[in-house]
Image (tube, one colour):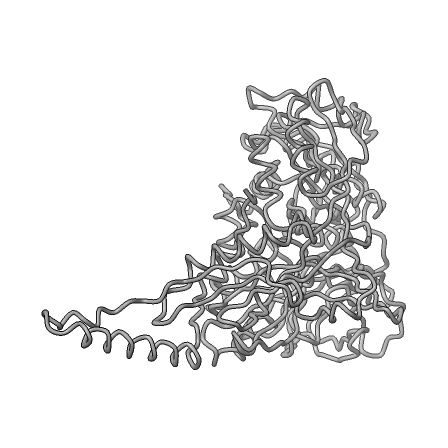
Length: 595
């Protein structure tokens, strides 16, 4: 009996039960008796309770006497990993839109729904957690109909925790999702949607075959890099890699072809036969880094090790951008770009845990557009790259449109938070008698630090947010420099709004005063805008009691010793260097609210 193929992904807001549903689908296929976050294999995913990487698995079912193979891709829910979602959608014909029956439609639910709609996927709306006492399925069906225009009759109800309704969902996937288009007799065309590096086998490529068939021994070519390889092994994920004889049109799996160089594989590239001339498949829009910071090795001699680690990570994480840079304070390091602050945190933790590389991380910043007086426009991603103030006609900052779903009684608190971050209210929509959608325009620099944490705090965890980049707008911005013992420390420089410069500078100096250890001479900390010092703190010197051994006697002897001590400290101050511990850099990252 011929097996029919369906390719689907699960999309949802964070914590609506994607990975739990994936576990139940795996159990129903009989791969394991009991699954527990089987596709969230990274330690970080299990610890934080979030999906970071999209994961694939091939599931076989007998549905009403017919054999079906459902290729399932579990996707992340956090806004920082929406690029992973967009890659997964390219490999599918259908999407299960999962909505928590207690929490209802959230910000990322709306965002992911439109991503799937753009790819023309068959969307199956599903209410999860109907077993909860606080579940309100009828209200949430109404929200889906009002906000997304989904017919309430098409909405399924399940409990991923207990397994209730999961079998019916599988039957509906087989019925509603169209089979993959493609011809196994045509020349090979396969899309790379992910990859990982194995120390023993080289690059393992995750691919979706659109046309043709690929087998071990075939000679293949990558269109973007124009390199030729011989296939050593092809297979499917169940969820561990399982070799098969071939992968045909419509199937999702992996291939190993002795690819040694990480840079030879690009996510979104098309694979074909070595001698074939085919049109490349539509790939992905290049992800645009939104947040930038620098990584330096905690031991200066390990910069090469950090470079190799970033190479490995960037293969598996196509949204990670990096390039070498040098700092007088920290030595040779790398300027890195991320989709958001969580993406940055996860990258640092993966470097330290998976690749065993200790890093010092500088304060995050965003990209700015600088218009010079000559009319030339340039983009900068670090405060140190900002030209001299005399050459600047205008500085433009990135603006995002933030969608916040929240209870009606908390609108005032959230509006005060957004106004304090230079936000402009665009619209207010009432989704139901108890919930609203606020849309604000905010500078990206104001939300990348702790805006999400503050939002959760003022709404007691009941609000959710999503944001979309809208372009650059002019603003009154200045570069705030931090001077330690008269020397500018570039990694601590920030670009801020002129009105916030004093408060930001004062706060950074107070943090550094606590974190930098006392020296034998007085250490001066200063915050400056251009040549003007706007804030100052002093770290008192360590005082040694040089007169301790003088028991009585002439006072001139004590005066002589104290004078010698002062002269020694003065010489030391001229030649001394201030030690900046890593904790000082990390403490500045924790922005907190300006009092």
